[in-house]
Length: 542
Image (cartoon, rainbow, N blue to C red; front, side, top):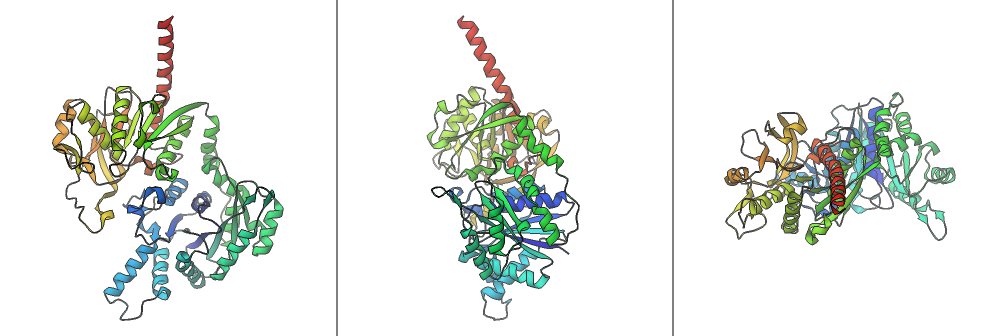
């Protein structure tokens, strides 16, 4: 029988419930258990597909094409388990399903209420993904005390009542703030958040204390006493420089041991040697590589979370430190790129910042700076090449301009933006890509066909393929039916490659996305090239 763990948060949002849930999944897998993670989000949007990146952050895409909360990326990267559509449940999706059922008469004329109809649907979604795994970890988004999460808490309470306390446990992640003027750590907010949780009918079995510093035994004992939790079930989780070190710290604190004992899992001590080795790679790095992300969603760093993590994975494997620079495409100037060892242009939507990206890519192409384009980055690279190499001055995308004759980027076949469900109008999830034998892409992947995750509406217009290729742009990969351009590259450039898909969604700390790994390697080589050029120029001057 599957054991259920619910992770809640108190005091403030953004405490790291996702990292805690991911770390616990990592530790339980290391104990030999099968694990699956799930996120319950209290917003009324059906999914985050159309939400503002400045507010929500990155939209993560699963293998089966779900657009989900970014925490699912953490779950996958920490556990190695590919998640599905039902791993992310929103209030909006719950209410939509219940209302659709009511309209069809499924409730036989009954008055539809939060209890039992909404909570029953939540319970169905929670229980529906386990598939006989040993442990399911369900994170409840939001903060205890928020009105929005009450139905989720009630559903979780009912599950414990139905399955028994021996099969269900609750972990509460909360904040212990440090008050500077008094130099005191305060446990009162934690006590209040636990009391709110109890008011919802739930008593936590384990408390994770988040803080910007180490907590002493006195603090843990105080929380244990006032929150009625065994002291060994009070976990100290201070801020760490590396999120991948969190499972190791949680292991030292006894998180997985406490869970094992509480749920009577009867597992062996975890083996974390490979994970330790991976984390320690960062300490072995002597060289620093300077990488720029040229984008437009910089109000919230999490907007490009998987891209940043993929860079970190690639740097780990190449044993270099990442010096990351953010360049706003809206305010691009050539000077921003002159010292960069490599540049990434990531995905996005809308016209804002596009001309800045195109200008930057022209400079990158002409000055032999390693370049990786992702989704929109590929589209901007094609537009730049069409304008400045093919001589198609008005080349553009139909997404950005309605006043050109040359849409080198256009809507996918059979696309309909007039659909009521705008979020459903994209190509989502995993699709095959056939690599050309003589391409750099084929060398990087060492395979004929690869499978990567997509999230886009627009594609390279096939009407312009011939002239693009004739002028030197190489098609590195296509859909198996040869209808869609999936990858492009420039052969006579040190490293210039772009993909319509998002390789960052499949990158793992122990197995970096191949494109990112090779991009970082090319950026490292660029450091040496620049150094040699400086030496040569110095010699010439003498």
